[in-house]
Length: 271
Image 1 (cartoon, rainbow, N blue to C red):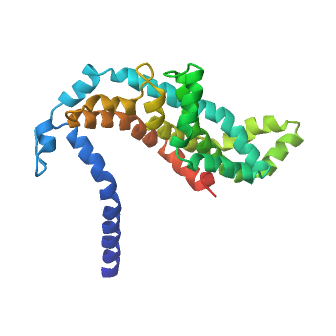
Image 2: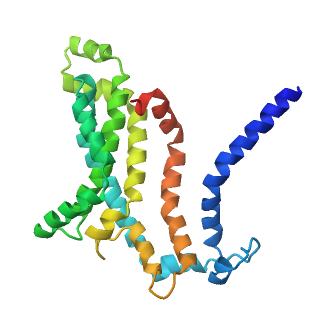
Image 3: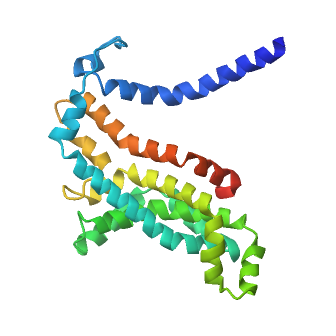
């Protein structure tokens, strides 16, 4: 009995050691979003304070935050949608025809620093007069979303028995029909996993939007710069804006949590 309590105690300590470093910055950010500037910069930190909504009022009233939210939504959803259209057939082809070199090439493209693509994108979009357009941002964000979808789904498709497709083709279905009617419904958890992860990466992207967007297509991560000036940083508004940016990603993850877990445990990131 004593050994059992010791094991539970050690497990609890281990959980705290993992959870506290992860949650502490998030809780500090959330608390700071309800503090005044004086309370935020006070030393020692003030754990007891009078909450205020002034920071959120500045974010949503003084800044055109809804427009930035719509821009981020358009770019993220479009990039993920086009990546699904291109990535699912590509991932299926890699899985079924053992195109390992292609999968490695796509992985290398994902691992390369995004800034290495930034200058070519800037030159191309400038000459095509597509700067500050949704097209430029969507195409650049597909550099993030497409490799994630292809890499996750190619591993997931490998876990689906090929006999199921062969049975459909024996009954008269083409390979394309078998892919649409048999493989994709089974791969639902993997698709949800890849969509969720790729959308979050697109939603949080800062670098491409910083260079390729201006006032018309400015996204949420760039909007935080509105609270940073040469003289000072409005930390309260920055924290409130950060909370507003993180909320959709957290909600999306919580909604699809069971599907993401199922997709991961069934081999969605195998390899």
